[in-house]
Amino acid sequence: MCLVAVKQPYVLQILYDDAAENPREWDNFGRMICWHSRYNLGDKHSHSEPRVFLQDLVRESMKPIDIISYVKDGHSDGLIFEHDKSRDVWRLQSYSGYFKKWYEEYAAESPLDMDDEELKDAIIESMGKGDLLTLARQKNCILELNLYDHSMLSMSTSSFIGRAHHAEWDSGQVGWVYVSHEDVKKEYGSVTPETLVKAENLLRAEVKAYDCYLSNQCYGFRLYKDGEEEDSCWGFIGYISDIKKDMVRYLPEECQNMLEDLEEVPDNGIDGYLNYDYEEMEVMA
Image (cartoon, rainbow, N blue to C red; front, side):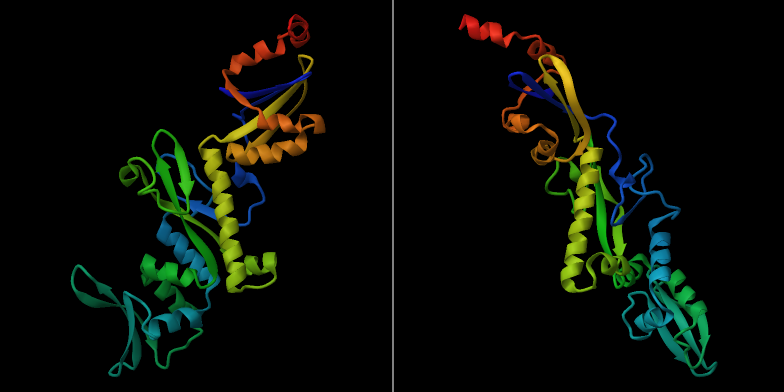
């Protein structure tokens, strides 16, 4: 199906763009990191699994003192530091829920060196996803990416459960979209609660564009005059109500109001409009 509007001597046709450019090829603000067994989603990356991605992000974003202090001050769910007086070392320990006991992961000489890169790596390697995500969010804006796969693909920063059919079985988290606070500062001049909200909204807008691409909400138009194609433009991605606002800028002034009179017709139905003799029908009337 396509959308058609007529305003003599013009015929405007809006139809799906099957060759639309992937929005992730654009100059995006955020990075979209995904994992899926059947689809290549988001941006290209080399992270083998979510935990590895979070480890790398924390390693790149955080200084040793920030990570060591996080555990030493008791903020970690699964790691603790304990001073062993007999050995005069600080023992980094992780808790096993299965065995219900603590295990030593690393021993650091006393007093603790808060700039110890080796200790920093030992903590990162021992941390669970929850702690890694908490630390990563101290230096990055990070939003979940959820995929809905049910006769079509759709992506959102919110869960589909409760708002999509069979979402309990056909949806789930596939990754994250994020931007560093450093890039937020480059974009908005500072890192404040207000600019972080702006950054998150921009990330959501990029996910919305990608969602429209995945769900084939990609369009183009052809403009005919006296039965001959006069102009065309492709690559409009978004909800049809939004892309009409974008298309108006590419149409001649006398054709811009045609976007308000679109009717749905079969793709091959455009021939009837192009071959229709409007002047003859006016005379007959």
